Length: 511
Image (tube, rainbow, N blue to C red; front, side, top):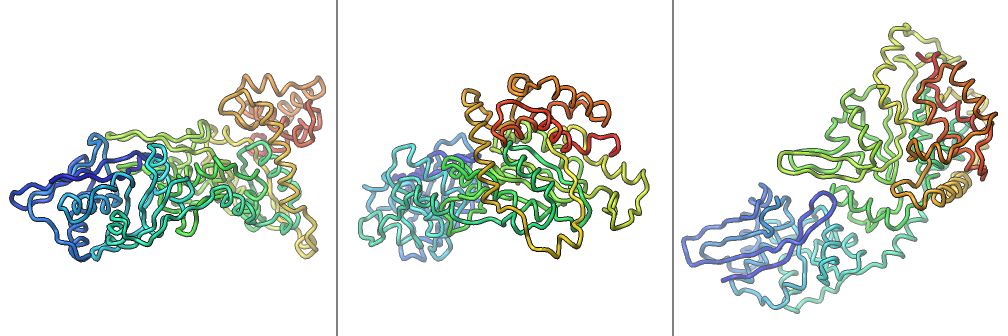
């Protein structure tokens, strides 16, 4: 007796269709699962057996062989419980088999036949649509993310619900959402607003430039200066996500298992702020069977690293590839996977171990050697990938006690969107470049030409302020973004002069 059902498995952030084949032979009772299953799939034997019996169906006697095809790719997770149970019931003749091939089935079974939420439903639904399979049967808690891709999604809570759907006896209707409506409604949500921030006009201007050109930024200042508060408001001035970006971001969160049950689509740019005790595998992803890390969960959004020197040195160094390529590749003996990781890096640090170096309101207790050692924890290659270094001083009492006078995030975002539109037009024929921060040396020479006055200012800055060689290209990129914010085709001397201010850690006085 033979039967098969269709399911899907996640590989990286995408999914592929898996044929769950079951053969029941009249031999000594046994239960085998083949097709490169991991431990969670192998353990499905006990869950499936108990779920079938406790749902009121007879469990067939004989040798049961379950094959997960294609058999040359490792299968992991508990999503195969439900399709295995359905295929066994079909092979045993307990249910009709005519309509099984019209569905992709995925779900974890409890011992009582209840169906639990699983990871990766969105890429599974996308794989079903790509293969032309018109419907999916998924756990009720996963229904919203499954319903936005344009297939009929049936929410189920028990094994018996699935059997009734396949036999045409169920009253459960497919759940469908209009992805455009969900996307537009999500865009109405609000972030923390910049109008709440008192003082720090220089820092707010720097964040506007960072948002406009997709520049990575490092904030340096004493404790309580407002670095974290500024960082949490930064996503609110970034350009709104496109539908394509929203789908891509939601897919990653679905695979990682961090997508809320009541969320169909992530329409806000993610803001990830891992603690400084995080491991390198937690940051970039990893494990025996690699999973996305924080850099991938921050894809199309912001990765905020507070207290940057407190992170382990090897953890910070693994940021080089994602910052350079917008993707992180994890290689293991069995498999090599790539995860998207195009994010804006925001980092914050104190100027010294005690935090008060250069603060007019507190006395620093650190020696010069301690200050140098503290700052040396951040390597030159990592600093080389951070375009802006800004100082965030303490806010005086007068500004703290006064009324908020800053611009709202909405006004700042409007200027950022206009600047990004200029850049999109500039780089429309260049693949993989959509903002000034992504320009290579060739593009910098083409789009960041200076007049004689601008060259003179940059030359003076390099020599008199002791700016490093790596600051040269960064200043040109920043100058281009500042000019875009002013809708200027040419980079003018005052654009260069302002850009020079944002390279604090390259100055000799910081060494």
